[in-house]
Image (cartoon, rainbow, N blue to C red; front, side, top):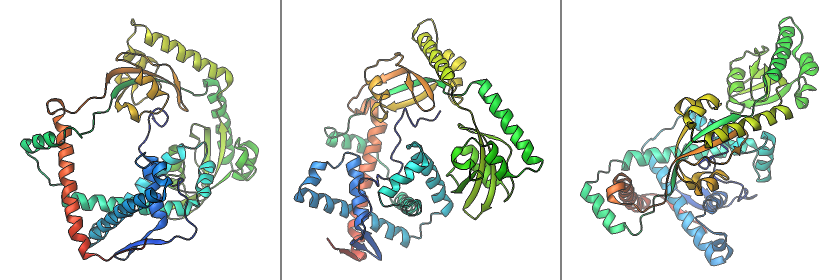
Length: 430
């Protein structure tokens, strides 16, 4: 089950929309041969604002803004120094690794918008085309991987004794973070899906279209005659050019496996049934056309699904029925239904509303109100709820050990940076 609605994701991309690209990008510092641009500084500040680590009030005064810019620039210089060191150590990152991460994040980013077009409009409003956005993000991904690999290679071999951990705890226990409230959840998903008759009619129509194509009818003619995608039908089904990962999963793999001039067998997606045709292909992109027969959700079907969700929710709240058995019988989430709908353990503050608010007022065993998402109606059960608490050596030794290790690594990195920066040309221009 996708959790794009119910659960918050880690930042997919840095929030580039808070600070748009500056029209005339100034160099604010140079580290080695590499400049640090004003847009990168603004970008990093925007990220801190988005995370709540820097307030708008701090940026509202000249003194506060100057202090924040100085602190952030110092951090960017340190990151640039790590990149210089990674280069000297010949740390490598393959293009395939960067592409893989980019494709995954691009798909997730698009899902946050009603359509790809609206996402592109948001990019354009911030001064980015898809091409410049892709280039910037892939550069960020590559640099992040280089820095991560260098630091792992040089600083991860830090061993702490149990006594080291105890000493760290005694010194810092008053400033250690609390363990956030967490919750274990199970869920039943009633998918918002078309009824069997709608699917049958759509399948019959797409198979009829496919037969016509096999018998020699032109793809463009069939698209204009039969496709239910109004935006592309009049253009012979032409969709445009796409990089790998731009299309939804079931369409993407087929599009990149076709030969130019060939069409696919019918493919099922959330929209309905497609037949793809490959118009042209380059090393990284495909140009495709499609014929779409939709499988809409009728008002009657929607009401039917609401009634089903209400009925399952009522059964789940009845102590006579086992939630896990109900998940096996009714859930449309193939990934979790055989494990009693179990989703896992989550920090409460990482959940998106309204789930977060429902969980905060719940106790172990509660069945939460039905939540409607793009996927369907979700019925959650609180398997266990653990309130926020203080870290202790007795119950949280592993967590404290990890914090202590990171603290030691951070000290070693800072010490190394002070030595290394003396060997690198640095010019600060603000």
